[in-house]
Length: 317
Image 1 (spheres, rainbow, N blue to C red):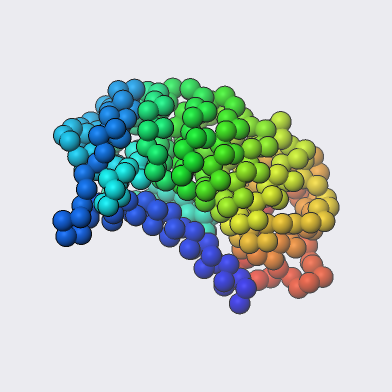
Image 2: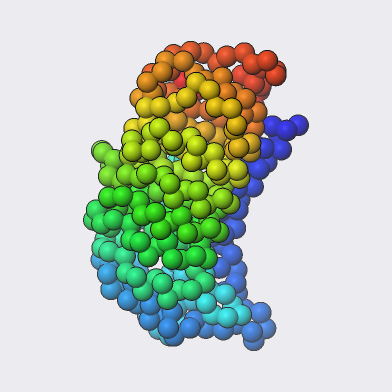
């Protein structure tokens, strides 16, 4: 019963991201004569943002005219005209399903080249922005700007596979409303880790439900990464695969992320060959991935029932 509930929790998270994406679109719909066009200051901010980008597929060709709420990728609140969503991801022919740990492929994908350029701080003029997706674009190895941490209304932030480099700014820890954060780098789009992080900033994101840092270099945080993510009690999905971690403690007395359903630690080079039993004490887990980690044990039997025998549990090593 509990596993079923947690599975529904994970599905809820996936649906939540879709809802956050569509919410601003719904808010653009007319309600009588109450619909308000975009605010001029925010329109100018978007145009300044556009100036820093090259757009080889002309995706931003709709960014003309007075009402920015009608521009591609922009969503506004219909009552106030404030921009709430900026979704400029470059669509890919495949997607990742964290519920099952598998890749899938879209039946049809519009051929589209990534946006190329730099991020303008004009985004700070979008005071009510709560959804920002710039994934699969090319920001030419620039660091993630510190000002992203001042977009304090954000509940969804996806900067994955966008060719950022350098240290993840600790300012992201100011985004206390975040539910979804993806800073990963795709295997398909990169041959080496270009981002690194100390992880101390994560403690400010106590509401976070989804976190992916795939291929971010966390070697600096290898001795305390677990204590840090343990401060995120609402996590449902945690992906730290291929993060250059080498420390996985054999004992961990106080596990705080009791709702965690998906945990991916694969492609790390842990310095112990034994799988810690405390991992299997997280009874909410439905998907545990430890492949290519130097861990050779099979799923251990646990005093409080055998989680490994659950039909809903997937253990990959």
